Image (tube, rainbow, N blue to C red; front, side, top):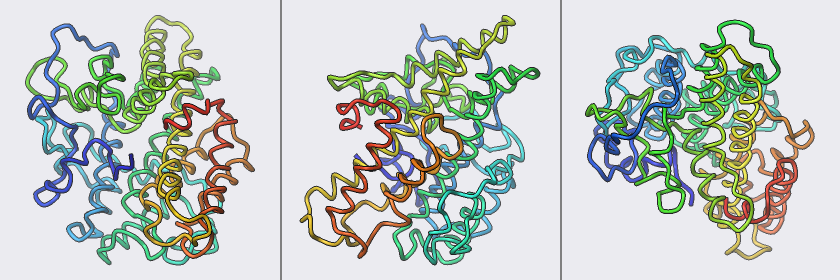
Length: 412
């Protein structure tokens, strides 16, 4: 099912946008999220990754605000993006959080300075109105500044070509810095290239991935909502009456890992558990560091799980578009309304995420995926059958590269 922005806020988002932002799950146990569990303990030993938690929050916050552009000026968006954040209220309506402002977690986090400055593959093909410099390759930072400018000054939420600005505001930041920085740290550990400040760097990777400090109380693959017990991404694990946003919250990449694991668990094929594999490896690798042992194997396990979640996300949103196209005449030219533009944006953004780290795709394969998805929703350009074939080709490249079973690909 296609969802806009942060998938677990849909039921709360629209009514609360009028009075403020929201960052909460489907809360069935009260405003604090899931209740405390007397048997639960924190397995991950540290919560000193405030910068990374704030980066997660800012990616979400910017996505929501761009989606509500008429109430958010270019200045508001630019300040959030460039680090003028300390006294700004966190987007946590709907839960009782221990922290109320960004500065309560970490001060002056400038996510614009954390994005990768490598130009986006094939971004020179973006159409006029979708790029600040059509015909030239652009970076994520250049793209986002342009989209924030357009959203804030023109009060638009999409371009004329069908680019949903809120999807790119959040999902490109999930690619860099969140996935790109986290994957780089884990890759360095896996290759034995981290000799100093190991605990600090490992904590940063954990924070970027966005797990709470204990995982099992949040999981229910069989009866939960998208793998989450009672649908809750916020749980008062220690029972102190509030949710610590550095320890008791499931951020976006961790939520994706849970959702994709739950979907795979319902098939007759293999059941990769990306969430548990990554979380357990991160906990055990941190223990290795505390014990003076080599964490490289655990770093590789966590990294492999994360990379596969990124790849599965591309497949998931391609599946969403294919589902919409399946009810149309094969010879019909794709037109506005035929596909979910949000799903298109997520497929494109997550495909670009694989540029920042992947171990299975060569440049040609990644570029083929980007071409198959397109430079924008292909309105007036191809028939339904042709676009279905393009999307199927992109999915096949990913399924072959990562060894995904047909049953899991269909379930995702």
